[in-house]
Image 1 (cartoon, rainbow, N blue to C red):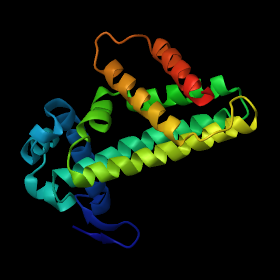
Image 2: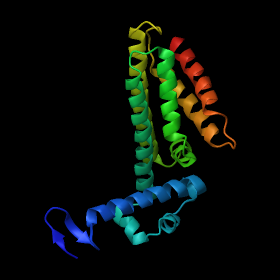
Image 3: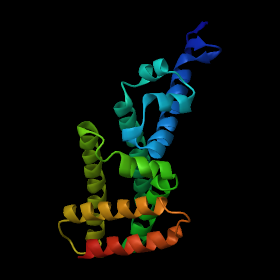
Image 4: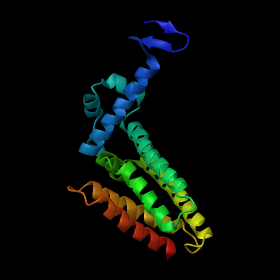
Length: 210
């Protein structure tokens, strides 16, 4: 082992921090596989370690247990999806409401539904996983609601949709979208993505125009 002022601690020629990040990423990837395959309730630290090719000692150096791992994994998946939708909304700024909805739905499905494991963990396995996970899930749902309410209010300013209280409508939209995405990722063969987007866009447009 050697010490370098710029890179910090080294192990086998690699910064220790880099090795720790890689190890943590391997645990997250394995948790994605194990939670989706076995179900969170039926999973174990041992199964995750086996899939990652790492030891339980290394696991507990990174996480306090399965719950903390699930929370970090869920937050990562959700943030990726929210970033994709936010980027799509910004790119469609000033476009017709129908184009904005299509782009946002496509971004969400491609972010969370392209990998069936992500959809399974974020839409199914976090439900009923315990009080702490449930609170976090509801917090994430409120953040999604706030994002969508802002988008709807922006569209209302342009006169495309009527002004109103969108909060409850956005909760209904979130539920509908997640149910459809979960169903879509769980069938083989999957229906064409454009068909799914078309259906969801009609549902959302109906909700915001009600």
